[in-house]
Length: 90
Image (cartoon, rainbow, N blue to C red):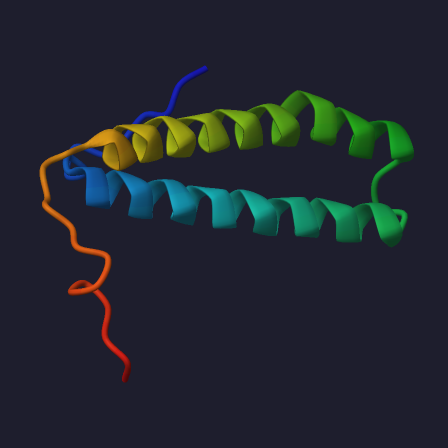
């Protein structure tokens, strides 16, 4: 499984924003399914199937993609940084 980005999501910044939004929507779906389980609207087996067959795998794919992009960004030497000049006391 892989992430399919919308055609308008091209830059690294947009990809990270999209991934974090995707992660949030997945978290909300997890909460909804958990509520159904707590309210006995779905069985324990259905809850566990959701976790193992849907949620955990998608969560891992999103997290891996976020980490892949963050690695590229953190290893970039595109910007010169200064640990004194690039901070301000506000």
